[in-house]
Amino acid sequence: MPDPRLTKNLSSGKSLLRRAALAAATLGLVALSCPSARAGSSHEEEKPERQEWSFAGVMGRFDKAQLRRGFKVYKEVCSTCHSMKMLAFRNLGQPGGPELSEKEVADLAASYKIKDGPNDSGEYFDRPGRPSDRFPPPFANEQAARAAMSGAYPPDMSVLVKARGYHRGFPAFLFDGLPGFSYQEHGADYIASLLKGYKEAPADFKVPDGQYYNVYMIGRRIGMPPPLSDGAVTYDDGTPQTVDQYARDVTAFMAWVSEPSLESRKKIGLGVISFLIVFAGLLYFTKRKIWSDVAH
Image 1 (cartoon, helix red, strand yellow):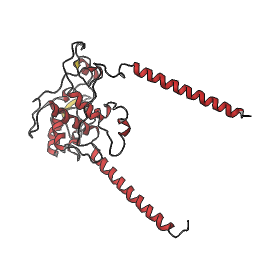
Image 2: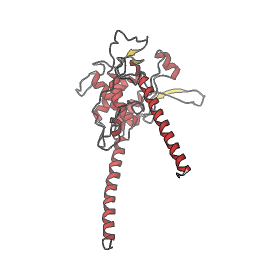
Image 3: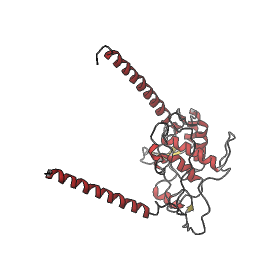
Image 4: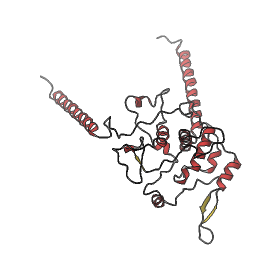
């Protein structure tokens, strides 16, 4: 006679399996019915273009000339709306970044006015910036930014590359963290594509006042006007002055800002991995030596 407890456990297991199958089917139906999950919608945002970045991969390093160009694009174009409050002027002179000279950093900092205080009279005042100061925001507060930008609030660019990205879908995302397949540039690809994604809206697509049509933005609507145009920023090194080049350069600079210590982190990581490989080899041969005379 079967054990009643075994029968009860089998019945309970079957019930759990049925519930799990029902839940999976329900989630699938919800995903298929959701507009953002259906393929083929004419107004669905496009997948960002896959870019080749010098800082990608285990051995990746930032291109110093590209970082300098990207900073110039940020300073002349992006800084009028977007803050970069986590970056200090002196960071621009550290190894692994644009590596400006001490004089260049000091002159750059002095060109900004920093609000300081209070002084002995209890008043706040403006003074020239110092290398230790952080980049001042273009607006006094969020309300002032929204008032100037027709209600939109320009995000801070300090870690924007880390905060943005897109879903690569199955099975590509399964390989993103594997050595040799690692793909951690979702945010950089997204931002570079977004900056180049402004188009004329189709006749059947309504763009509200104060917004613009961008094929990479969710819903294809964005509150930021097209920030880049050919020839808008002058490069002194002969690099093409095109929207595509500007987008790549400023995105690379933003990637560095989001992780200024990327190069040193990768060097440390490679050193640790090399040590572990050597250590594992020593352990193996030590084990072989100790147990070589022991009968098995």
